[in-house]
Length: 296
Image 1 (cartoon, rainbow, N blue to C red):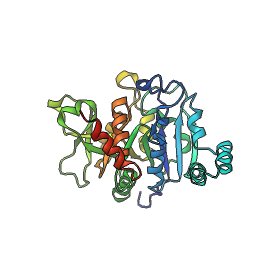
Image 2 (cartoon, rainbow, N blue to C red; image 1 turned 180 degrees about the horizontal axis):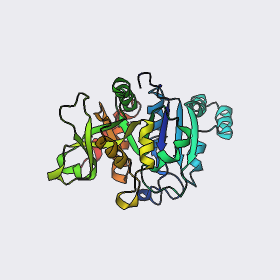
Image 3 (tube, one colour; image 1 turned 60 degrees about the vertical axis):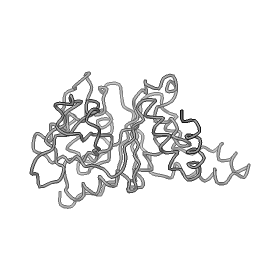
């Protein structure tokens, strides 16, 4: 582990059904819903690429060709834009497939449901001596330094088994998340002892919650393949990480510098859209005035 390989691959989980957004997600993945003028998945790829990632592994399911097409060239649109002299828009479209090397992996139906299964689906394209970035396809972040880059820095410094992004949540909301129990007096900052899934407020070991950004060594993927399904008969990454922490492996739950924005339900999605609009130089002033005008 002294000469670790640079982290160059990111796995993005995009195989869910987006049932909370039906009927909008009947014919398109939730990850393709727009945040202003770019789909959610585009922001994740940008975060990874801006952190030095070269290979983007998108784990999809049947019927999600629209997602794959998005990161490919579209000659008809390009020709139409070029013919009408819309060169700025043409450049935007042409640059999308150049962002990274895109690899598509289909999550077969024989895998159990759950956020651990995309890692098993992508296992064949990961070498056993490398670590990878893992991202939930519906979690966005706002930060000066990309959150993925923050986690990579921690991984390179301490060479742990895994690094998990963490953010403080109000105590009354701990029952919604996986909450970290930290080791006391550990020489490694923020090393965890356990992850308690959705604890009641009175029994929560902290108010630091897990969200969808990880650096995972291959050992995590191997452990996941031996982890039984948990709540709801789903395969949970949290269970594998907890097992490794209890075995004495170094698992770090690193507080991030920035803000975690989930888009997993319509209200959270709307909040994320508003926050992005308020930081966009071209629309924030007028949009801010609009929000003040409609304030009851």
